[in-house]
Amino acid sequence: MSNTTKGNLNFHESFCLELEYIGKILQIADNYGYLTKEEVSELTGIPTGDKSGKVEPHIYYANYMNLIDVNKDGGKYLLKKTDLGNLIYNEDLFLVENVSKAMCNYFLNSERFGATMWFQIFRIITDKYGDVINEEVLINELKDMNGIKINLTPFRSTYRNDNSLKSLHLLEIIDEDARKVKFNKNNINKDLMYVYSYTLLKELEALDVNRQEFTVSEIIEDIKWHRGFCWDEEVAMNVLDELSDMRILSLNKQLIPVTVIKNINSEDLLDKVYSLLS
Image (tube, rainbow, N blue to C red):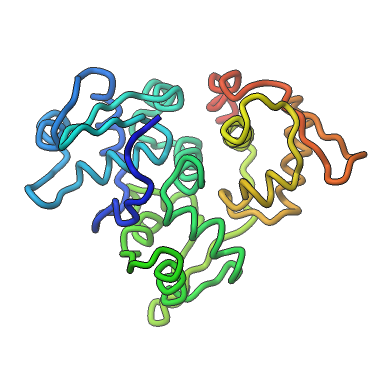
């Protein structure tokens, strides 16, 4: 586990996610001991400075996307790839494929794995206000929830820049003057079925590694798994049906609430994540 803090709400400083830098960090993870940000910069070419720079934000991005575990000792970082990080390192180092991007975006907005601000926006605030939200409302909600003002520019830019997560088409600015953010809901990509299943199993294992059976209420209300992909509950249930058809899980619809039984573990799916790409 990482000892970087989820309480660092402005971990991104003023920098949006740049996928090239994530690949650079994956290249050095596991290969060195504790490194200063200056040493990481020298090894990767990611720019940094005395008080600001892109190295530390991208270490946190990679950590919150479940690609690396991080231990921090003073001003030095020890970087180790996770199982998912090793997969992406070997299959899609610079995260060109939407499979990689969707996986990383999911974990980035997960309560248990990801960044607090991303979780609050994707899985709490959208539940409260719907899929079109004034940016001022977003900022005020985040301030009320956390007691500090959060810089939203990196979040917005992450979904508008080609070198980031724009190709996922998860959100857009529909009124530049009013700064209204629209979350594009209920997009399902058949190429991502193993992304959907892997993320669900990882969340269930994080919830309770000793259990095989969980209620749909835990998935929808506690984990809010569906909101990580901008789905509503109906779409989430349809996807669960498909995962049942794939024998990844079983559904017991005779119980209220419906229960989900894991047939395999998340690690059993890793080698299949990219297998549906055409």
